[in-house]
Structure formats: C-alpha cells, structure tokens
Image 1 (cartoon, one colour):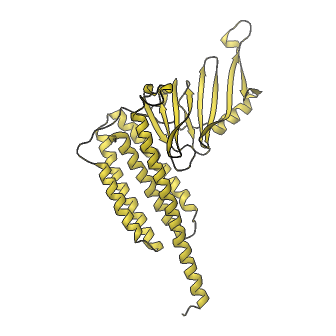
Image 2: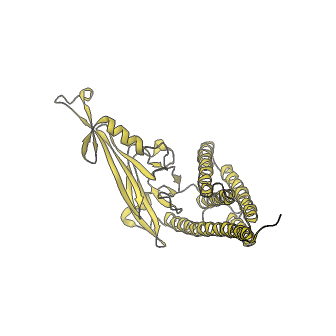
Image 3: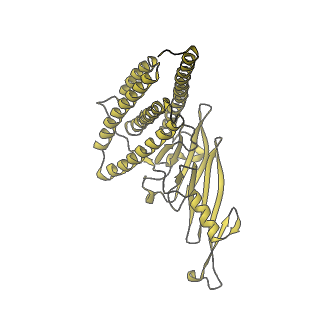
Length: 328
C-alpha cells in the first residue's frame, strides 16, 4: 500500500509532536528535580546547624523533622518540630517551624502550634489541620501554603459554656467559625471538609545510621550518569519507554538495597514504623504516576509518562533515605 504525500506529512507531524512533548515533559521534570534536590540539601544544612541559625526561634529544641511538598509545586518544604517522636500520640503539645526554598535560599515561613493531636495533612486540598485546646474547648486552624506564605484558611472553635453552678455535666458546647457563631451541623461539615487521618510523620533528627562500607551517594551518582547517557540516545517513543523503564528499574533496585540496610539497623518498633511509611509511599507513588500519565491518556506517551514518574519518585525516595539515615 502506497502512502500519499499528505499522509506521510501527517505521520511525520505526529511523530515530531510526540517526541517534542516527551522532551518538554522530561525537561520540566529535570528542572523540578534539580530544585527539589537543592531544597533538600539546603534543608539538611538547616537541620544540622539548627543551633546556630534562627536563634530567635530557638531551633535547638527541635528534635524531629519532615520534608513534604505542601503546595504541590514539586519542591519540598521543611517542617522542624520540637516533637521527640513520629508517632501521632506523641505529637501533642509541640511547635513546628515551617521553611521553604525561595529564590534559592531557605526562608522561614511560620510556626504551627499543636497541643491536642498531631498536625494532619490533607493531600487533596493541600491543607494542614492543627488543633490546640483542652477540657475548655478546642481551636482547629486550617492552613495552606500560598506564594511562600502560610495562609489561615479558616479557624474553627468549640467552646464550653457553663451555667452558674459551673458543673461540667451542665456545660453546653458552642461552635464558631472565624469568630462567628455557627451550628453544630455546619461545624461538622467544615471539619469533615478539611480533616484528614494523615498525620505528619516526623523523623527523629538523631536517628542517623553511619555507614563506612557503602557509599550510597556514589552509587546514586553512577545511576544518574548512566541514565543520562541512555536518554541522549532515546529519540523515538519506543526508545524513551525502554529508557524510562530502565531508569525506574535501576532506582528501584537501589531503593530496595538502601531500605534493607536501614531496617537492619533498627529496633522492632522502628522497623514497623518505617514499613508503614514505606507502604504509604508506594501507594502515593502509584497514584502520582497515574495522574502524570493521564495527561497523555490514549496516546503513545501515556506509558512513557507513567514510567518516567515512577523513576522520578523512586529516585527522590532513594535520596530521602540516604539524607535521613546516612547523613551528608
């Protein structure tokens, strides 16, 4: 069967568009990855030198931290906490200091107070939920990071009102939203909108494992070097799919190695804790990869985007474990 010239031109146009889209996608991801790695490195410096930095905040009291992408721009933020554990039942009564990378420098954003339960993160809305209070009532503040500023989305309060006897049994609960009285039904509806069971799982700063045997950073560098060369020779969609799969496989193997090394140096309770975190990360990884590939749903780039996102997220997880447990 002979193709007409217009059919050939149409085919060439499709191929050019597909390859071009892939390169734009890859370029965007590369820039995002570089910024993310720069942020992590800068935050590691803040963690290690916290006694010398931001003295007005007294960061020397901070015992744990977490890096999480709060505003979903592909670059993590840092939460430094005075909490001494990552278990949610141990996070009551602590402060968390929020930092971001702004114009290439670490910027202190705000302080979050939590005295009732752990700070919760709503991934769908990108909001933080922090409670403060006790027997007299609670104040629940919902935050969102917008343009490197922590915006208070809304403040919900439930206060106890006592009669003349002052008896607890006769006390009534009154509900407020942004200092305006509301009904119990409205209060519950707003709480359910922002509430999440996902706590910020803080990591103990002292929980680092020394390693004089394996230079994981060197191994990571070799993987990056190898995959970079593979991408240079990936001009067709088929080539890109093979390279993306290979890149994901290499980072996945490295992740399994480092994860095993980390667990081998942990107590039974710590092993259970990191296993829970890891299983949660795996689910999020699959979900994010699916979202990334849906941008090209039905096209030849769908499977490429899926594998590329898996590789990117796995690489990020590798560096996270190296930074957290093996230090600089």
